[in-house]
Image (cartoon, rainbow, N blue to C red):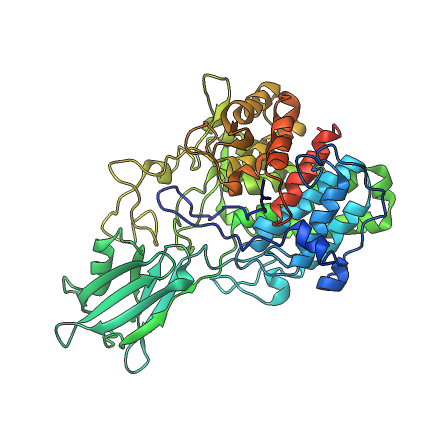
Length: 558
């Protein structure tokens, strides 16, 4: 069977299931066999300059699975090999790269989580040292350190992102260079979008064409004018046409009483605006906060100046990062969740964030609560857990099922234009859904694993949920997601077991459901079989979390 390489987490923040957003994954990394054949298994420090220590020398045991796969996915030798190949290969998610395209959030965060689980599995501080090396590099990529700013011009202690996640904008000027019209596209991969201005059918008009090269989408707005009193006023015509393929809106840039001219002719590129996503901050800081809690809970580590000093440093960094999102926190009727402020240049500004995007930051809240006993983070963890609980339904197998978007939110219900951007729900998405129905798709395996991890943390800290909840999450995997096809272990995509069989971007995330493994003994054998049956090869960062979890579960650290 040909080996499968890890793919990046399929996680566009605006993935609603209503339109497709291709994976951000790069080409698969070279296989283990070709590396060994060519002598390519180099020292990581020499290959990348990251200063990563070599693993301790160990005798490699005979694999129990060699007859079926190239690797024993429950051995530390396999984890260490995948770690080395990931870092020397330079695939997206390296700790010393910016998060502009989400590489830290959907790559390095999983690497760090893998180190934590390997430490818990073997109690070898080598894995804490690995984490420290990478976290130090990652902290140097914060906007406040490298002088980067978000869309408001703020340089904050977190990690911004741009293309393919955020709204793209282009400023059109008249022939004298005066700004007259801002055109925005909320379609993903906005950096591949261009706006072309051509002559209209009269001297006082122009035609605007917006083209997204990634998807091949084109919208044409003919014979626009810049007179607000005209029915062909550009801002009004573009607004009235929404929804369009390129999800285009426009804003008049002229001041009061400034007539300005028509936009100059030509083709102009859109630029994705920089935004710090709460889901990215959550994914990045969660394993760092878990390190802090691990050190503070262990008397031996706490007495070690090196590990304790790093824990104190990281606690300050994590606290500063999560505080960036305080203006997104909402609490209503005891339910805690995150909401994008209206005007933030994301496709669904003004709406409640998907369940998994709230719980991604919730993971960090839970670890901060555990590490510090903070009433603030204990309260937020409880409130978010109550929100999650309201989203859960129990199916006929006594398994939990939930949706990607929260059912109380406007995205789930759908929303219409009010007639004015000032009173619309969203500045960049004036309307969503039709017939009173919005984005109601069932959650998928990969994103769902984030919420399961959060629930397991809240349970561990006795802040929310009980054993029966954990058992129902476990049955979600064992009864709804786990399956096989032609004798090969795989999964379905949706947590209710509906839809097609999963692609590798989903089924390779299966071990991330192991936080609830002790409530159902079917989960671990199936997750391991997914890897053995597909002969999984080194590749992306999420694979290190998966193999870390397989080692963790195999050694009963559950």
